[in-house]
Length: 81
Image (cartoon, rainbow, N blue to C red; front, side, top):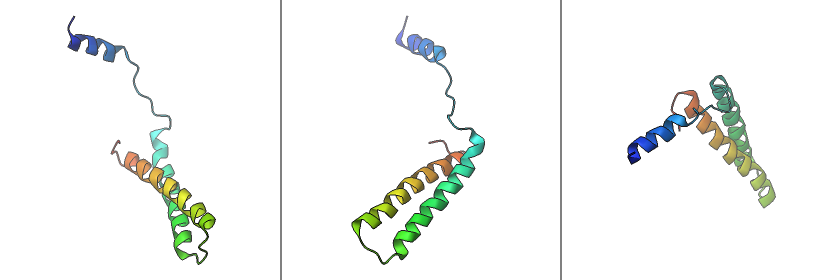
């Protein structure tokens, strides 16, 4: 048995990938995540308070929400990453 046929047999025996979230929720998750991320980014930019705790409390959620929002936006438009 050649290596190619062994790989094909292993690939054929595998189970298909199932997304943990339905595809119909991707646009909603993208919208909510991006909106919340932009809110935290604007809150950081507008604020006059420059303590490190306040800055981290705004920048960390903003970065995480914008990151997930972009990924779900890509998924919503059919660009699977």
